[in-house]
Image 1: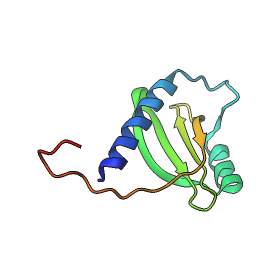
Image 2: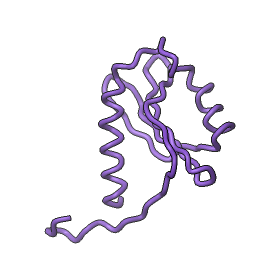
Image 3: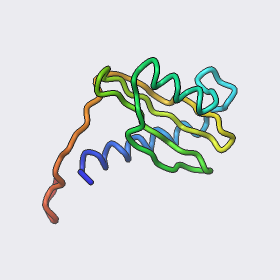
Image 4: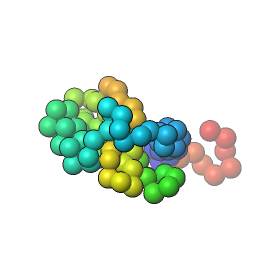
Length: 104
């Protein structure tokens, strides 16, 4: 794995942990299939990353190379998916990890 990807994943994981406080009744939550269809149809986004967070929830990163949009979601154990963050100018990075024993 590249260092940049690891840093991004860790940062996204921290944001997902903070999102654990979201309740499914909020306006930014819907059944997972509804959210995925909307991200695909409206923004052309597909899943780029996934990780487990506390209490059985799943954090996912969706993005589109075409539109440059990105979205972070957390799916709760009850099947509701909540939008955590979204933005523009998504880029896929392929950075080499620094040599062992060297500071970044």
